[in-house]
Amino acid sequence: MPADDLIALALVGPSGSGKSTLCSHLLRKFAGDLRLSVSYTTRAPRGNERDGVEYNFVDRTRFQAMIDAGGFLEWAEVHSNYYGTAAATLDESARAGAKGVLFDIDFQGARQILAKLPSLVSVMIVPPSWRELERRLRARGTDSEEVIARRMRNARTELAHYAMFDYLLYNDELARACDEIAAIYGAERARRARRASLAEGLLRAPDAVAAQ
Ligand code: 5GP
Image 1 (cartoon, rainbow, N blue to C red):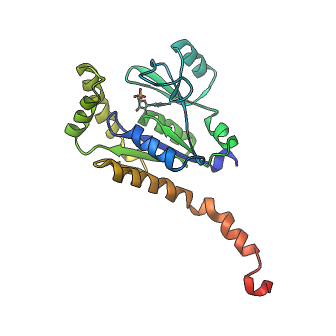
Image 2 (cartoon, rainbow, N blue to C red):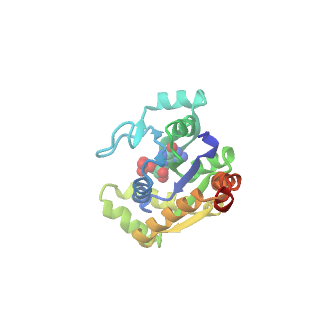
Image 3 (cartoon, rainbow, N blue to C red):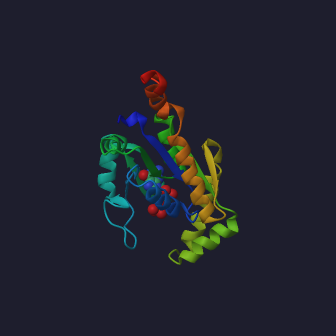
């Protein structure tokens, strides 16, 4: 399948919005069909993160070399680290037989991909309230006060860009939000442009009565 036919889906949302859980849910539900775009980052691995699985972990020199070589579809600085999507991601996914690629990126990355790939399906996760978002960040128990404050500021900046997104996913209840993101991806798969060959095939085939 050519890379142009892939469904490119960007899921954007502030830290604590439930984005990772929603991504995992989608990847499980559409396993073998939807592939995660594994980004490059200069941040250090956390906890159980493995190189090449959650991220490709690289140092700043390597990241800069990739920028210089035009190796990124998009890249951005987020929370004082660099993150980028390899330019080869779409072609690689198409070659691997995927029908869709999921980008877990920030709004700056979504904006850059959109400029190059207008068919990008973009979804922003909206938290129920600032209070709830802060509660979720604290519940992780991993971040300092300073980091939490920075993430809350970034969340506001991120949300301010809501108007560029196709869909807003309201994550007041995770199970419902999981159903909704699956419905969005499912609907994209059923678009006329992607299903036209089914209808065309039937129109070319003789009908059952004429074939008898
Ligand atoms: P974290 O460090 O918590 O894994 O990710 C921090 C933020 O960077 C998240 O909002 C995540 O979606 C975003 N991010 C991850 N990979 C990329 C990428 O390749 N490009 C951009 N622009 N943002 C990314």
